[in-house]
Image: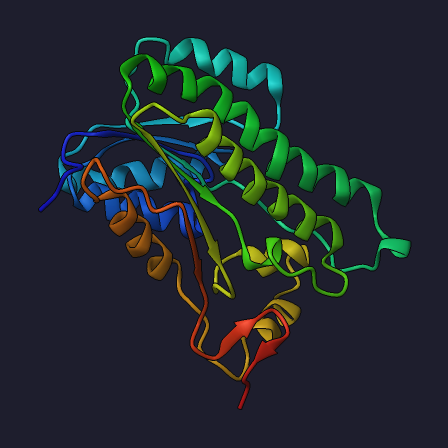
Length: 253
């Protein structure tokens, strides 16, 4: 049974990776979409592709870490009833130790992974409360559960997402709004390419010798979590490839 048909979902980080996979899976299941990302060309390509599904799609070029821009965006969707929020925007930059950390990388990760996540949530949650309906999906990471060498600030930002997901569930106690934190392990997307600033050799090495998860593995799981009866709130899920048991244990051939 599809409980989500004709719902309206807002997805950040929608132009690539897990965000884009969620877009396609939801469109296939007749969910209308508001797509947010920084890259207009990618958003336009995605919107054109989604014509085949016959759902309503609107795109917004937005960097979620820019508070004033998010506030301007809030005015554009003032009269929208949003049923689903997927906080997918996020990134890792660099792999340096704390003592060698690059401050600009730290700032960017904190701005997007924590502040941007909060800015968007802050404008959507009151709308959901008003209609007493909604489901928030937050993309955490196993990095938020296990701090690995040289992961420092990225791990801290994902730990914050996990803590804030629990806080949302607590603050929304008594409402019909669900909050789910999804924590993937190794997923082969643009993640490592972004982390290593386009160094494809380094990026490829992250996924060599084993089968990592794919973006659609996560998107299919998110659809399952969303498509549950009203009385079911799946709050936390960790998902890793079979070859991986935590960030330290990856069986490579």
